[in-house]
Length: 91
Image (cartoon, rainbow, N blue to C red; front, top):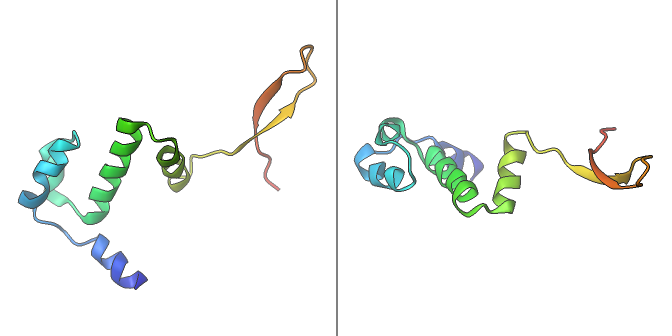
């Protein structure tokens, strides 16, 4: 099933069938020249992150592209003893 789904994600779609959807997402119609289901999923995903500001979608997008850095709270030895965010240390 994995192989079938992966291969279907890369099938080139007919530009006329997807052009309006791409325009509705706010992208230029030229993107429709070499569009695949994988690209349409990515465009919809980015649109959800930007349009709705969905924090779960944003976190997932950052994880997928390798830019999500988990943070942990810890106290630093400051005068005020404030809690601050710091990158999680890797083992």
